[in-house]
Image 1 (cartoon, protein in one colour):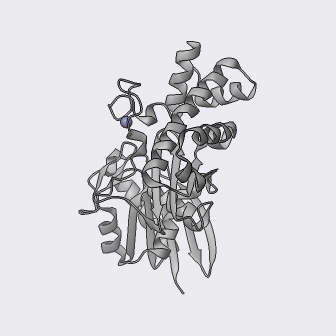
Image 2 (cartoon, rainbow, N blue to C red):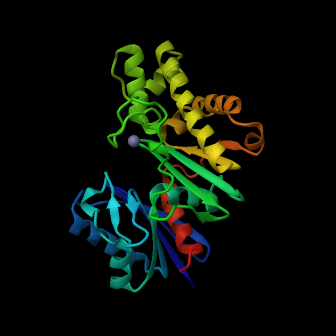
Length: 294
Ligand SMILES: [Zn+2]
C-alpha cells in the first residue's frame, strides 16, 4: 500500500498531511529550535521516520532552483538557503521527493483538494505577510524555466509607489498584503494599526478603515485584471488571513474586476475564496507526492 507524505515547511511549524488507504491525517509540529539548520533537519528526519512514506512532497517558502534543486532565496527561512532538501531526504531515506515553492504548492492543493477542482487555468493568490501567487495549468504547476514564475506580488502597479519588502517600489505586494494594508490605513488616518485592528474597524463601519479597503481592493482588482489579461484563467482563488476574516474584500474585488477585465476573459472567470486555508501547503505537498512522478 502506498503512503504519501506532504510537508509544508514554515519558520516555526511543519504542517504535515499524510495519506494511507485513502485516509488523510494532518499534524502540526512545532519546530524545536527556530532558525537552526541542524535542529530543523533533525525535526524533518523524525517526521519522515514516523510516517515512513513511499513518496514525499514538500512546500517551502522560497525559490527552489529547478536546475540545481537548491533553495536560493527564502526571506523567512534564511538558515536553509543553499540547501538541497530533495537530495538530502532522497539520500538519507531512499524516498522520492518533490519540492516546490509554497505558493505554487498551495495552488496545487486547491486544484486537487480544494476549490480549484476541475479548473483548466487556476491562479491562487495568498494575501498574508506578503503576496504569493501560484498557477496550475491543465493539472500541472507552472513554475517557469528556473522555478521562479508567478512572483505576482512583485509586478509593478505604481511607478515610485510604496517601498516593497523586496526593495523595489510600487510592487502589488506593497499594497496588497498585511503591511500594505497597514500602510494604506496609516496614510489615510495618520494612525498606526495592525491589519487585524483595521479589519475590526471596517466591520464596525469605521470610515477610514472602509476607505482603506476601497484602495486595497482597487489594487487587488488591478492585479487580478493583469492576471486575467495574461493567463485567461477560469478560476482565481484568494486566501490568507485578510480574506478569511473580512469577506467584503472578496465581494468588493469581484465587482471591481468586472469593470476592468475584457468581456471575453471575464465571461469564464470565477473569483472565489480558497478552501484549505493555512493547510493548502500541506495538502498541496501531499498532492505533489501523489500525482507527480519523475
Ligand atoms: Zn516587491
